[in-house]
Image 1 (cartoon, rainbow, N blue to C red):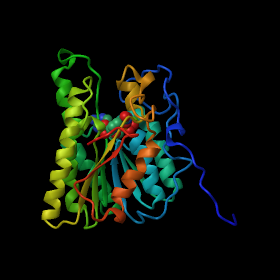
Image 2: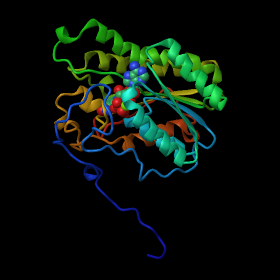
Image 3: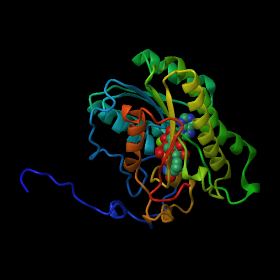
Image 4: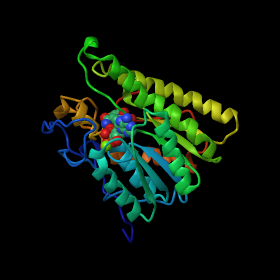
Length: 299
Ligand code: NAD
Ligand code: MG
């Protein structure tokens, strides 16, 4: 072999830690620093190929987990990023994500607050337009869930809150953003393997994820029929190691064992799906859902 550099071959099942993990429950919404083992957001590995040069992205839940890996990947592909997140306790996570965006030579703007309020969603979009002048990519990624054993264990406020955070916010954000999205833009919504195979301990959450699938397909039709040139797609992750898990799943020691890989995915393994859907390479893809499930089947 001359100057050829060969990529190291590795079984993807063996690439990251497998359960059991230590039992380390957190309060909602959870933080990166309290996670054990630490998650991989592609900090050391993601290499950009100028696939989003000059684009502007808004990412809800961009402080941690999947949203953080997406923010890092987008910035390394050449995009400026607005990161929306919920809570004071996540300030450090959000600032760390912003640091990686800035190290990639891009601008990061942080907006904290609750996206279940339409007014707050409008503020996120107004801030992006004020700072960047347009929005090319809207990633609706933030979500709430809580494990409950029985129907009687689910308070009505939690049912309503889950829908408000997970799906009402998508309507508010898409509606506010659309007038500022030029042709060639794209919306990417985070759904879940729960849209196909609902986990009995996540009744409201799984129902919102099924709603997100339908919303994605239908909004795609609406925007393309109107010739807006805005594509709308979804990503359906399987079990991914993020602060959502130790803060809402009591049995997180065994999280991800129920995949053919026998381990959860890492945020870094999900982010490339968002890059692809946001890029011009996905020019002819709209109304689709891309599963990233470690081999869990979604047909
Ligand atoms: P995460 O905790 O890192 O991210 C979720 C983010 O949502 C939080 O950082 C928080 O800031 C934000 N958020 C929550 N409630 C909010 C509110 N009311 N207002 C504003 N922001 C709010 O966890 P994650 O796993 O990376 O979650 C990202 C997405 O991935 C979610 O849509 C989740 O449903 C989805 N998902 C996760 C998994 C998994 O196993 N982790 C599997 C399938 C789908
Ligand atoms: Mg967070």
